[in-house]
Amino acid sequence: MIDIHSHILPGMDDGASDIEESLAMAKIAANDGIHTVIATPHILNGIYSNSRSKILAGTDELRTAFAKEQIKSDLFPGSETHLNFGMAEKIFSGEAVTLNDNQRYLLLEFPFHSIPPGAKQEIFQLQIKGITPILAHAERNYGFQQHIEELYEFVSMGCLVQITAMSITGNLGRETQLCAQKMLECRLAHIIATDAHSVAYRPPILSTGVKKAAKILGSAEQAEEMVTVCPAAILAGEKIVIPEPEQPAKKRWFSLF
Ligand SMILES: [Fe+2]
Image 1 (cartoon, helix red, strand yellow):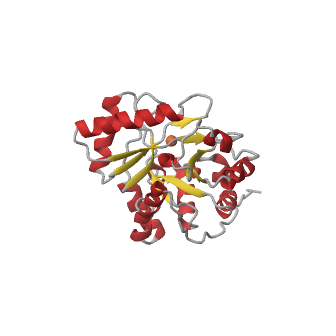
Image 2 (cartoon, rainbow, N blue to C red):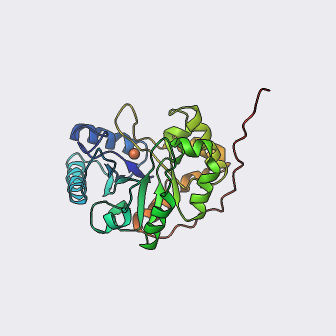
Image 3 (cartoon, helix red, strand yellow):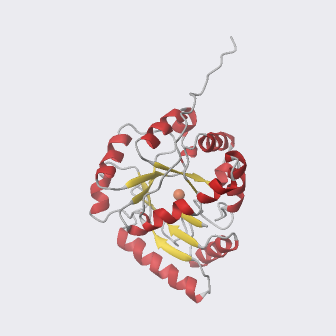
């Protein structure tokens, strides 16, 4: 399996605090069957200022440490870029890192509480430059939880969607789990990733989420593709053919009176 979303680089953000934790996370991932990880520290969110050069150097250092510890996982650079005005220019000027630094796919984080106005225009600017946005853990966004039909619009305009394994298993709350389930049922999610932050709190484990996704999708093969075929294409910068999404029904609001 390939994990495209992991805060495994030490000391970059709210993920691994030091190299020991990074190595411990890598061992947990390897034991779970994850052979390749894209390191995605937060950037452009006003809190963490990780430059492209810092992320590339950090990835090289951790890859060397993997070899010393005989951890057989591959490691590639990336970032989780906060939705930002003028993103496309920032990426091309080297302020942000696309997944595997190949200028094809960007892991894009929305604020948790809303779908920002202007998001579609910014995404369009990325697409003009040939970059496909991957919406990070859309199921955790309150706006999509309340209005999943808006996620359909983003997918229809060419966005991919990453869903977090622990959201599917219910570890991140009931609303998040329900949204994750709906996204899978409507084929509005394309990649499952860990969004791992630590050894204990959010560990790099995919297998339990994939098993649960297989039940929801009614297909083990489709669930496995979300951690194998799709992320492999992202890593290689190749085009992904996605299943036709179903238009989800709007959430219904019932009144007691
Ligand atoms: Fe993340």
